[in-house]
Length: 436
Image (spheres, rainbow, N blue to C red):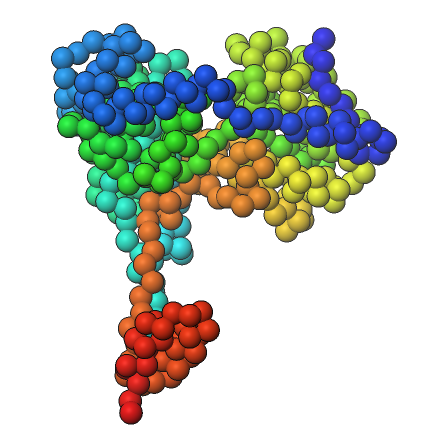
C-alpha cells in the first residue's frame, strides 16, 4: 500500500502539511563543496594533467592525452548512421521541432533594434551571440540525448560559432544516441570528460579544451556545485533542483493518464516531486486507485514509490480558482492543466517553467519533441526565472549615438545630476560639448 499524502485545503492543518510537502533544502553537502573546490583548483593549476588523472580515477578511463578524449565529427556521424532508422527519424524530427521553436523565439526576442528621437540621437540595442559555449551532458546510466538537443540547438540558433560538449563515458562506454544527437544538433567539438573536472576545464580552459563563455546543462551534485563555484568566471544557466510536476485537474481526464503523468517525474529520482491539485474528491480517489494499480508494472517502481511517499501529494482544493492560486505559490517546473477548458485557467497561472494545456498534452512530449526547451527553473525559481532559450546564448549592448542637438539637450541634465553626486569630471565632460 502506497503511503501517499492526501491533503485538503479545507483542513485546519493544511498550511503546515503543505509546507512539509514543499520543503527541499538546496544546501550542498559540505564534503561535496570541499572536494569540488579542490578539483576546480587542481584543474585550474594543472590543466590537462589534472583532467587525465580525474578521468582515470572517476571514469576508469586511462588515456595518454586529453586529445585522445575528443570525439571527432566523423565519430559523431558514425554513431548517427549506426543507430536504428526509427531512432534517427525520432532524433531528426525532435531536432527540427526544437529548432523551429527557437528560431521563432529569436525573431521575437533576440534581434537588435534602434530608433532616433526628435533631436536625431540614435538609441537602441545590439544583440550578439556568445563566442563559445560549453554544454554538459550526463553520461553513464543517465544518458540524455534530448538534453543535447535542448542545449545545443538554441545556442546554434542564437549564432554561437563554437559549441563544445563534455560527456562522461565511464569505462569508455559511449552512448550512441548522445553522440548521434550531438551530430544532429551541430556540436562543434566533444570531449569524453565529466564531473566537476569537466566544468573546471570549460570554465578555465586547458591546453586542449578551450575556455568557454557560458556553461549549460544538467549534472549530478558535483556538477551543480562546480557550476556554482565558477559562476562569475563564466556564465551558467541555472542551479537545478529535483524535477517537479504539478497537475491541475478538473476531473475530466482519464485517471490513468494523470497517474502516469505523476509517475513521469517521480521516476527521475527519489527527490522528484509530483503533486495533483483538484477540487473533486471522487476524482482524486480514482487517481489514487490508478496509482496503486499501475505502480507495480513500472520498471522504476521503487524510485517512483520513494518519490511519491517522500515529496508527493494529492490535494483537494475548494475550487479550480484556488488550485490556480496554490499553483502560483508552488511555481512548478512543469505545470499540466488537465482540464476540459484549459484556456479558461491559463490567464490565472503566473508562475511555471512550462505550462502544458489540455488532457492530450503530456509533460513527456515537452521533454522530447514538442519544441519548447525542457531545461526549466525548479524549486520555486519559476517566480523569477525562465526556460533555457536563445536569449541565454546572446548578450545585449546598448547603442547610443548622441547628435549635436541632442548633446545640447542632454548635457545640462547630465551635468546637474553629476554635480549632485559629486562627480565633477562627469559634469565637465558633458558641459564641454555644449555650445557657448
